[in-house]
Length: 402
Image (tube, rainbow, N blue to C red; front, side, top):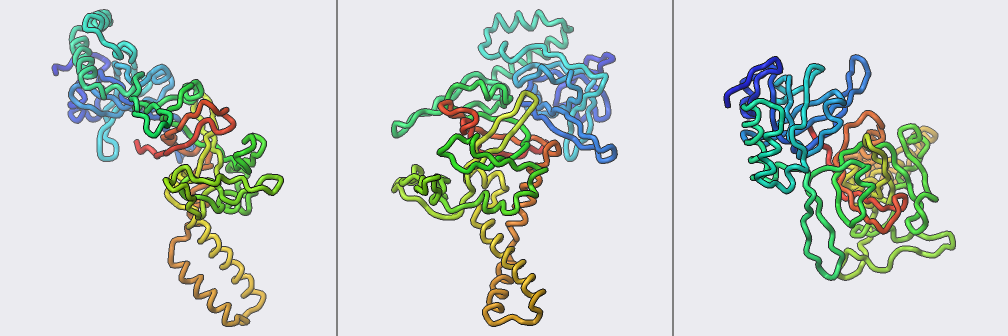
């Protein structure tokens, strides 16, 4: 396209970004998604917040722009059509990105609601009413037409895909790929799955899921982590590897409270093994904080795929190793045949990675409140429960790489 040059820089297509590396330009594009991100300055020790906005236009479907100032990103949501001015094109890692500065300007020309149910006459009227030049309006029209035509360019969608109900189970509504804030999560009143970008602040151990959760809490954060000397016993127990329910949990009266049948097995039989006990994690963003219930499968994802069986086995080996080392110090040179067999067995186990120590390091990293970038959490909402009693349950999470 013919570039429009002003003190804001030329208006360019996203496909032309490679020709303007090091220069300032104007971009007109639709927001695909918004990713909060933390940057730590090693020289000053300060942590800065920035927002990475993924945008697209009719020439390139994905391009990242970093916005540092809160005035640039406080009102932007996925689906908005933006005019970004004074954006510097830079090389970042193996690609390109745009970076805003104090001189940059971000205007929302059309918001996402304007494009949800587009009428040709209405869209033409909205474009005509924008106070921009003719060349900019021409680019705006092309971006809007591309957005409506592809549909997928709008990450903000108020329409949900209906799932066919099977075996008389209640239908869940699958959300689109856009991300909500925690304040929007708290307002959900339907059974659904929600995606959220948020940071993790603390873990909360729960002694029982049959009693109110808030009455059985033991908080673990970066300050109290050292006080939990036996965190394996706190988080690992014998249970069903399919449904994640502890199998030998007893109440105050000594009665076994585990379910007789496994809901995830067609034969209704539990598959015993070591599992992670259900626990809570607290996540937060700029709009608030909320607890998530974490069961065995989700905990394995949270702990980078390390299963409870490996943690338990390596923990036993680790404790055995420490016991023998202390024994050797007190009884130097006095080890019988049984001791030699145990040492040989321990050395064989030590050939494997020590998943217990790796697991401890992961937990410490997860609890580094304020030092981590946000995770992408997929959350299941059960409106029949209270927020403190497991209304929001972790399904899956990923660590976005900007």
